[in-house]
Image (cartoon, rainbow, N blue to C red; front, side):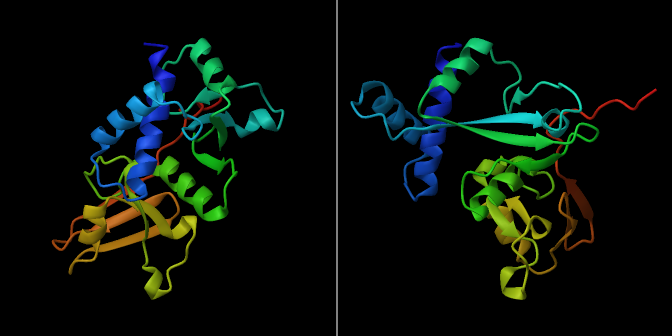
Length: 210
């Protein structure tokens, strides 16, 4: 299983990129076709892996020596991590977080700001911000809380991940969405029910000092 994980990550990420570029095949079909190409094709140079590593910002400041962790994986043997790191087709990205709260403070930027901002938002919320929706943020659109047409800003304070279905739902009469702060999205239904969805910490908060 350890040997299969790097291949699965690479296959899944490449399949999702093809889907986002408009490929009409289902995600499962794309994974299958990419897997066949990956294991049987001659040219694999176009398949790349992105590996996210969480790092406490206090470590970079020299305040402590808290370790970093591989984002999105509970347990991953060091050998597999080393193989991913050594793979020339892998790209490592840093996620800084604040140890007391566990919240993201910065995301390593190797792309243009709009892409880095979208990654930051997806990593903060992890899933669609519509109440009760569990669709992963990686499969959601980055939505302007206050519509861009209504002079909504393109910033962390006005962007959140919403799946296509709930992005359309938000525009129906009676629905209202607001974002009082970057890490909080409040949705109000036509019946007046109000639910706040908060960004998730990237790590467990530090215990209070005694």
